[in-house]
Length: 341
Image 1 (cartoon, rainbow, N blue to C red):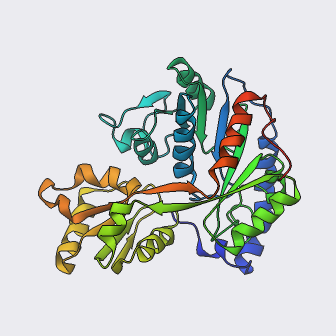
Image 2 (cartoon, rainbow, N blue to C red; image 1 turned 60 degrees about the vertical axis):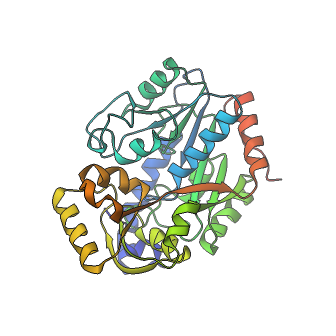
């Protein structure tokens, strides 16, 4: 599904009408967040967000796992496997699993770092440890209390922040911002924008560490996109972010086809997209997440029409991130929280 547009605008009539439901939902979620989780014996680093919808969690989890690996750790990423039929716990293998079984994001993640999916987070983390993990990076689950988390990192999109500031369904927040900040050790603002900086200011007021990063498309994709006419296709929570990536890379978008988040593409979708690309005589630019679902359905002779645009997360200042990870691995639960320098 796509996030309602009114979530990202100043509160209007609909938001205020739904606000009482949002207050109840947020209170229940916050009470749940405060529960104590199970300690599995190795550090768990949670990469979550305050709102429903994409904020850059998956690229952040990949970047953290790569940093941990460079420092001698054996990181595993733990995901719920949203959109997949398998309940887990199971390790995802990009070579033989399909998106309909494990979910699109875990399939993408497994191309970068060893990944386990599980509806039961404790069972998933336990499997990761049994397979040799020295640290678990949990992609999503900030509001899930099942596991004891050594570091709780909230990822915030700089351009959208927390939207209209209301809780679901009146707005995108999963629980009141102040309450969620109290259950967070650090905030990562991804990309520029006043909404994100407003969240950063609230975090600093609560002595919560604030980090900054940006999402960058792969250099070879940018070189191909520059001056290229493309049909933009995506099935993500906020397709406008993908549109901005393409425009910033110098592409000329002739049309956009935005499907719902985690959309399960069909042969009919592929036929329609391919026909439109041929009619417009242009390639199809798509996200790496969508590519893992489109490629198996795509005619091999037409593969040249698919142009995936991978993105990676670049920390504005890597040193504080590495210091935070070092403190997290060497100290007990809750020790990663420190006053803002």
